[in-house]
Image 1 (tube, chains in turn yellow, brown):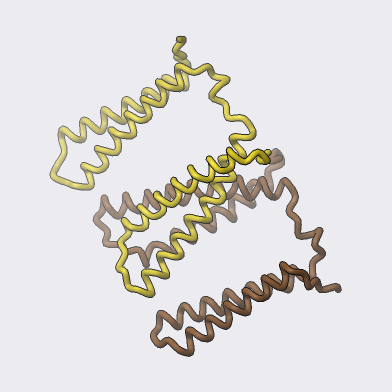
Image 2 (cartoon, helix red, strand yellow):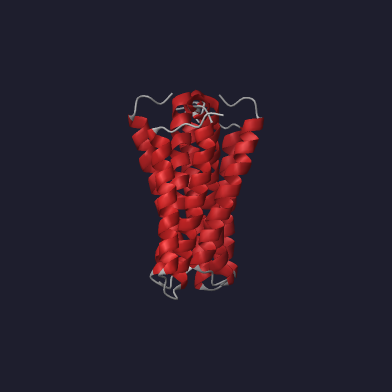
Length: 135
Length: 134
């Protein structure tokens, strides 16, 4: 198995390791702030995720990583529909909050958009991939 | 000018009439500023749908079919607007958390909606200007 060590791979792994290092340094010198802890945790997690992705990408030949026209089209079609679904979910929650006085917080919106957006995008990607007529 | 009266146009106008009727009923039978707001929004939506239906009925059916390029431009713009929407929400949430801002859903969601729609419109314009879109 050949491991690529080109500029892009080195740059991305550098960012990943830097992110983990920054998170660890912040964690060592942290105050008792909950928000800071969240940022440190996110930095470490993002760094580890990025490093794992780089290792995976480095083992693949460069030609295999280029998305073909059909995959690009499926991603864009799914993203377009998921975008409208997210807007619809935000609108429905807004009116539900107004009518029933649910007192929703900002965090609820964050989780709604993230949950609806990510899952609908993944499901729609799967659906369009199954359909044969996507150019 | 020939006005079409096919199934789609009739269905569309039916929805518009129902929206206006629902808005009037809500405003008449339910009291309170919230229901007044919902009723007004429904009536405005109904009026917009009627205008769209009239424009569509006056346009020949062949003119209404989107060409392949417009479909691609819409999809590309929608895809990027979707990521912008998710990014904006994450950013707003992080800012509120970091600076301990006491924001609630009702005050932020219209802005997020606005960001999503505006980025979609701007990106559509941008991709439409670009010539390399299939």
